[in-house]
Amino acid sequence: MNPALELPVEDDERVLLIVEDDTSFARTLGRSFERRGYRVVTTPGLDGLDALLATENPGYAVVDLKLKGEASGLACVQALHAYDAEMLIVVLTGYASIATAVEAIKLGACHYLAKPSNTDDIEAAFDRAEGTTDVEVTQRTTSIKTLEWERIHETLAATGFNISETARRLGMHRRTLARKLGKQQVK
Image (cartoon, rainbow, N blue to C red):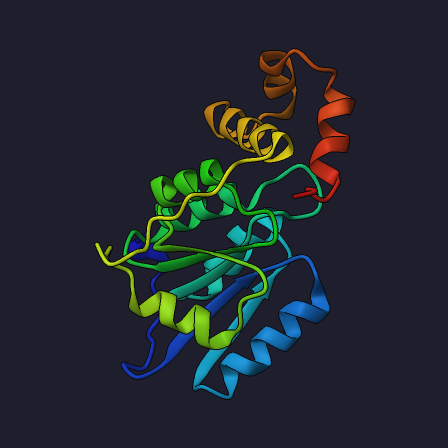
């Protein structure tokens, strides 16, 4: 954590940052956490993150994986972890894949949840920051669309979320990649 940005915070105050571009979802999730005793701050993406962190010192964060524009929620996870390695970060997504889950954890998230997840799930994920061997191993086949989505996100992470370089490495036009990132994944 950057000591120059530290603000005095009451010992019992739990500050939660929600990085979500869907304002109504962010508002609903925020209200639910406020009822549980958190002070909630929100930002729609990476662009507003630095300004927010200059005035706030969150200990918890919920980051949506797919944000409007070209920035991925993974870039937000990376920035938040660089700001404070002790922050508990949960990635929440409707576009779950093995590749993005692995990258989120590598970049500093403590947990990765697929939507729909509720406040109970997210708060439990904060409490389960340590790994467990009790997870059930399942036999699930992977669709072509899921494999494509995982490959795109793996390459995005490898290029530091550079859209042009990712498109070049994948052998596709930049606009094609931007359209694919803008579409919802079909499972």
